[in-house]
Image (cartoon, rainbow, N blue to C red):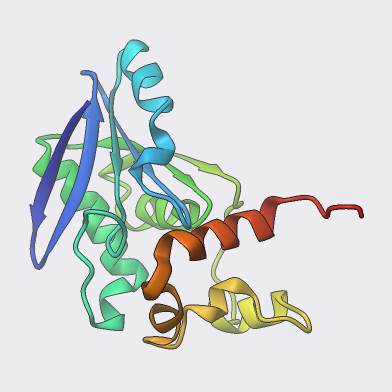
Length: 183
């Protein structure tokens, strides 16, 4: 696997690639990194593809701009198209998992000449409607705050997470995936 930083206007995107052939861009979800695709990279390479897994901007070794507007969907789509072009390809298939699924879907919708095939894992395609995503997330939580809403206020999550990132992630992952224990 080859690690490198792809230089794009105003941002660097960490990419890990393996194989040669038609390009497949792999976009992770939350709270993941390129590493989530570590088993798919060699499998795709063996199948004759050039598989590239990125750290989405704001994650891992990719740039993390301070401006909230830098994380709008159009910026994330531009990153994906920029990575494809920077790697010397004209087109790619794109695969998204979790939060990477809406990014992949929008990449294919907004850059159809670049992304000629799309696959979504874990989160189905949801077309635009009259509801703001933040309002939908607020409703999804019911009486509790939906985890996506937690990250909407700049600095809020950082104040809680930064003192112990590893411990916070451990708690987040185990609280959202562990079955209840019986005493």
